Image 1: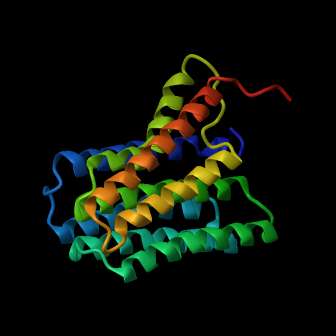
Image 2: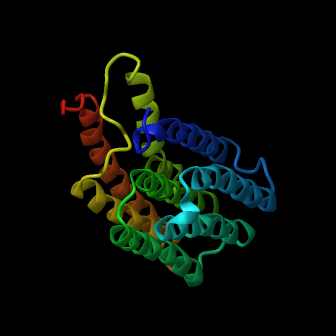
Length: 235
């Protein structure tokens, strides 16, 4: 299979399976590891998974991919900050906002350098990983309902569903470019997760924000799932 989004399906599937496995551990046995071990495991996972992809796509040669890579590396920092001190703090919210700001930066840089399909998948999976990390922080350390993992888990479940369906039909790639609707809903999800991380927000309000995020992402992926059932148009 030629380079581009299509050639990274196996990596997207590996990320999906590992993300679902991690969320399963976080839900079923959150105390299986000490806080330090949990933070270390998250960091090792990040370095192995995204480090391999960064080198494979030649990310060191493109500034957009370098920014995305740096953004990814801030995710284990955010996770460790909560694992080692499970209290909400504005500086942690600020760190989460920096990650979001860098998402905008790498997009602008990519448009100036010229977009790369493989880099686009790198960016897409880093967005998904950010949601997984934020969901874990919200549940493990800030008391938000475990249903928040629906927010982090929909992209992995979507990719796994695609991998099964492709044995029977030719569904559209889960790595295709996102629609305006998907991008707007992604912003709403991030806002909800920011509320989950913010100090002084009552747990009931955090859970309410999570509930809204869940409804939005279920709607978004219902539309996307209908889309992958339609094979790509020829030509």
